[in-house]
Length: 59
Image (cartoon, rainbow, N blue to C red; front, side, top):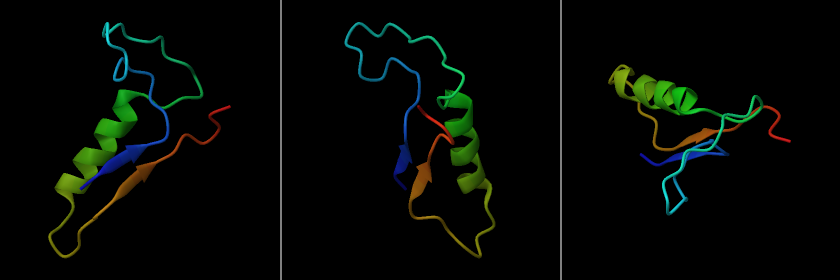
């Protein structure tokens, strides 16, 4: 299941792995983790094959 967040303030693309400061209107790792855990915990009657998580006002 691909998880596709719009923008998360992490060091993911930073070669030096220096973490970025959190920005109030950007997603955090907590929102992404919450969405992934929810997919895993979902009842087996259904499944989620793609997960898009967007910040409500990223600009």
